[in-house]
Image (cartoon, rainbow, N blue to C red; front, side, top):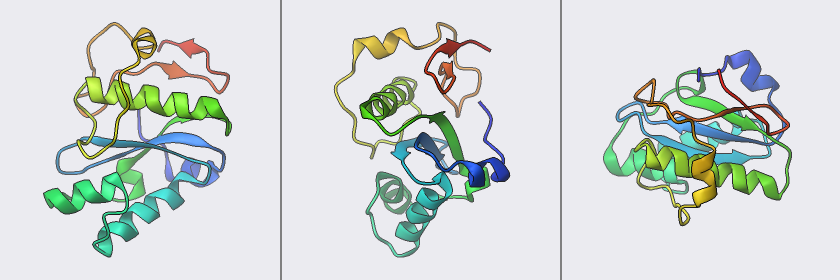
Length: 146
């Protein structure tokens, strides 16, 4: 997956699951928001700059003295979706995928692994060491392989 352009980020207003990458260790925070993802990113940065561990991402950066970056460098839309109970399932699935591939920050709270989420993972190895091997999905939730 590639990081999305800044123009596309500004246009992404709906609900989505996104990830924010640590620039030092390349591990990721996975979260969801019903607001533009750039607004959520600004909140994480504000927490870091005010030494406030209010999010798992801010806690990771502050406790480890790691570097954070701009939205263009660190923020990625993983899955656009509508606000519903399904959004929690999408988020939990991506958290599990990132965790299993050792790409999730340790400060992120995780639920018990769900064996159904393992069925959604692609069977081949990680192509990029800082990004998990995750299924590409359309807005309808059907899986397509690239």
